[in-house]
Length: 356
Image (cartoon, rainbow, N blue to C red):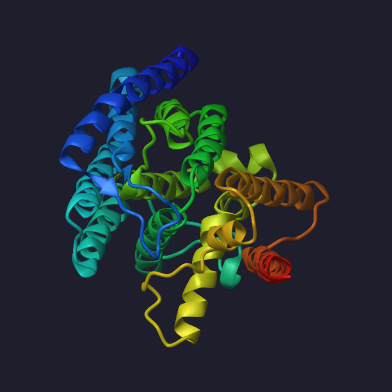
C-alpha cells in the first residue's frame, strides 16, 4: 500500500510545482523580485528568484496529503524547521537579512531537530576511534553537521540545475533506501521532493520567459531537510546490512560535492585572511564555468563526480576493504585539488589562445 502513496506523492508534487511556477513568476515580474546580475553572479540577465516558493508548496502539500497513516513521530519537527528555513530564505531573497540573524534562525531550527526531533548522530562507526556517542557529544556535533550541510547546499546553488539535480539524486537514493528499510513515511516525503525538483528543473534550465531560480527560499529548505534525513537514515540499523557499507561513508559520498567544495572555499578564504563566510567566485562550479563549460555541462560533471564517489564507496565495501570517513574525505579533497588545478590551467590556456 505504501508504494501507492509514494507514487501519488511523486506525481502530485510534480504537478503542483509545475503549474504553480508560471503564475508565481508573473507575480515576481510585477513586483520585480529578481536575481540581478553582478560581480558575484553568473547570470547575465535578471531572473525571478521565486522557484523555491513553488518547490516548497508542491512538496509539502503533496507530502501531507499522501502521508496518511505513515506519519512518523518526530517528523513534525522536521516540517517546522523546514518552514522556518522557508520564511527566512524568502525574506533574504526579497529584502536581504543580516547574516547573524539568518544564522541564528538556522541554529534554532537545527537545535529543534536534534533535541526534540532526535535527529542526531548516534554512532560514528569508528570515526575518531569511537562508536556510540554520548548525548553531550552527539547533540552539539549533530547541530554543527546540520548547519554545515544546510549552508553547503545553499553555497553550491550557483549554476543552473546543480542544487536541484543533486537533490533529485539524494531524494531518489534516500527515498529508495527508506522504502527498502521499512520507513515509508520518509520515503513518501523524499519522493515528493523528487517530483517537485524535476518540475522545477524544467523551468530552471529554460531559456524562455518562465526561467526561475530557487533562491535561498529553496536551497535552505533543501539543505536542512537533506541533512536531517541523512542523519535519520544513517541511524537505521538495517542500512549497513542492506547496503553493506558504513552509513556515514555512504552519506558522505552522496554529499561529496557540497562538503568538499565548502571545505575548499573556507580554506581559501581563511588563507587569504578573510571571513570563511565572505562571498566570492572561488566555488568549484565557478572554476568549471570559467574553464569553458556551460551551466548544464558543469552540473552534469559534478553529478557524475558524485556518482563516481558513490560507486567507489560501494566498490570498497564489496571488496571488503576497510574505509573510513577520514580516508574518503582526503581522497575526495585530492580529486578536488586536481580538478581545480586542471580547470585553472585550462582557463589560462584558453586566454593564451585568445590573445594570439
